Structures are given as C-alpha cells and as structure tokens.
Length: 402
Image (tube, rainbow, N blue to C red; front, side, top):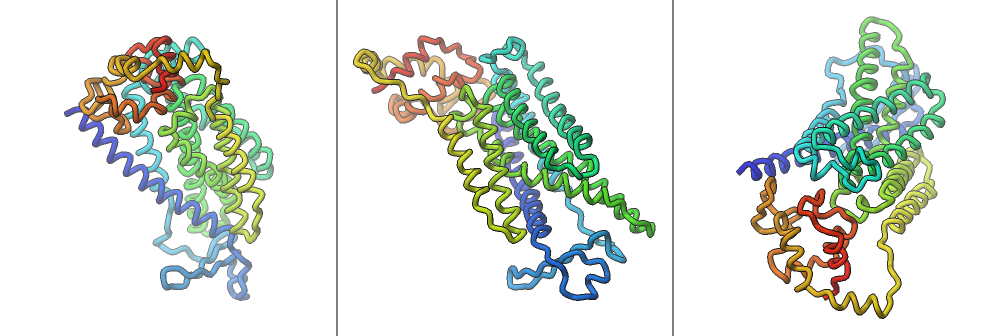
C-alpha cells in the first residue's frame, strides 16, 4: 500500500509540475514575443504619455492592443498583473518530485558506483542527498555571482553569456562524474531551472516591486531594476528549451549512460538555446535560419556521439554470439531483473514494473532484447547494481542473439 501511495503522489505531483511549467513557460515565451514585436506607437498622444512601443494582434475572435511604457505610466491601476506564482509552483513541485523519486532512494538513483572519483562512487545515501542539494545551491550561487560581477550594469551581456555557457558545460561534466547518469541529466536541468526561478524570486519581482513603490511615491524608478529584470528574463528564455529536454531525458538511457554523457548534454543545451534564438529574433522581424540549422547540427552531433559503437564482425565472434540463446540469459534476467520488472514486483519500493516493462515470460524477455542489451551494457541496469550482476553475466547478455 505504501508503494502505491508513493506512486500516486508521484503521479499527481508530476501532473502539477507539468501544468505549472506549461503555464510559466507559455507566459514567458509570450512576453518575450510581445517585447520583441513592439513597434514605435503611431499616435502622437501615445508617444507623449511615454508609450515606448505597441503591438496590435488578433486572437480568439477579438483584437488586442498592447502598449509598453519606457519607464512607467502616469498612473498605475490597482489590479496590476504580476507573473511569479507559476514560476514558484513549477520549482516547488519539481523539487518535491526530486525528493520523492531520487532523494527517497539515493543509493539507486543518485550514487554513481562507476564514477572515476572514489569519493563519489562510495557515497552513502545521505551523503549523495547532501551533495545533490549543495550542487543545486552552488549552481545558483556561481551563476548569480557571474551576473553580478561580469555585467553589474547590464552592459557586458556578451561576456556574461559566454561565461554562463562555460558554466553549463562545467555543470554537465561535474554532474556526470558525481551522480548516476539519469540523475546527472536531471540535476543539470534542475540547476538551470533553479536559476530561472531564483531569477524571478530574487531579482525580477523585487525589482518590479521597487519600481512600483517608487511610482506610487511620485519618484522616478531606478532604470537598473528594469534592465536587470530584462537581463534575467532573457537568460530564462534561453534556458527554457534545454531544461525541458533534460527533464524528459530520463526515458532515454542511450544519452545519460554514455561515457561522454556530459558532451551529449552540452550539445543538447546549446542546440536548444540556438533554436530558441531563432524565435526570439523572428519576433523582432528578422528571419535567420542559420540559428535552427546550427542548433539542429549540434543535435545531430549529439546523435552521432550517442550512437552505439559497431564492433567489426568476425567468424569467431559470430560463433560465440550464436551460442548464447534465450535459455542461457533467462536465468540471469530472472535473478537480476525480475525483482523489479515483474507484473508483481518483489523489490521494496516498487508498486508496478518500471516503465511497464515485464520479464515474466520468455516472450516478454525476447521482445525487449535490444533494450536489455543496451541498458545492461551501459551499466545503468540493474539500478545501482543492487542485484549484483557480474561482468560475465553482462557479457552473456551482450552476446545473446536468439
């Protein structure tokens, strides 16, 4: 019953997380589009009262006229719309999912027993949880310090963008060295998502509140608050597509179990950012296909890096492979895999077979042969090698052909 309750909580939290993320990302993309689509107001009276830009749009059978003020209008309405709760709910629900799925079973999901760093490979569960939390916090602190020190007046954003790009490569590398593959991808995405939500919480909303307070007091708002909010919002929009990709990556072990997973991850991050750039400049009236072409090229390189190596065939190797049959590997799978991958799992904490994959019969095992060989060869399965699969057993499964 406890496993069922955890599964149900996971289900509902994931639903909440996706709903909040869609709402937040959708609103963020909309405002970036709106900001980049503004044109100089045609009416002289609008320009005189401080309107910086305007956009006319049609949607849902109606016409909309959006206007942006360079500093602030003469009077603010009482029902001013604020955009922050969607960000907070997205982060909080995502962190709750991380606690429920990863931190509740750190020995399975966080610890990387194959790490080249002995201290990482030998972490206990509570140590892995602590390191994961420190990893998230450190990612935000370093990113925030880069923003504050490299572009304090928002006048060196090019240099800052380069530094943030290098930071993300470092984060990708460190995560794959310290944590298990699936957790590494998730935590890299979580570092970016934490920066996004923290940007809203620590900089964007406080700056906007100071601007509103100044206006209500009849004072001129500090222009740096507006510039800083714009800077952090721009960072958030380029983080968006890579974060979404990293959050759904846990279904694809070919990426996170690869020896160069950090390279694959970095290529995905930059590819997503370049594709996002295409839409950003498109809203400003410029069509630059070089951005999606470059982004797609990086994803193609990631596909090439992640592709399985094709070993040259030999008569001896073919003879050895032919000798390994279902009858040879089924006892291995029954001993090492069926505790989780069964219609009625016996492994504690599993209410249902992961991903719905069941190995109760020979036919079910045969249907999943390619996937079994992939995840066993990479060392990703069994999780944390909790059932003690030996190297000889892995070799037998790799050689299994019928």
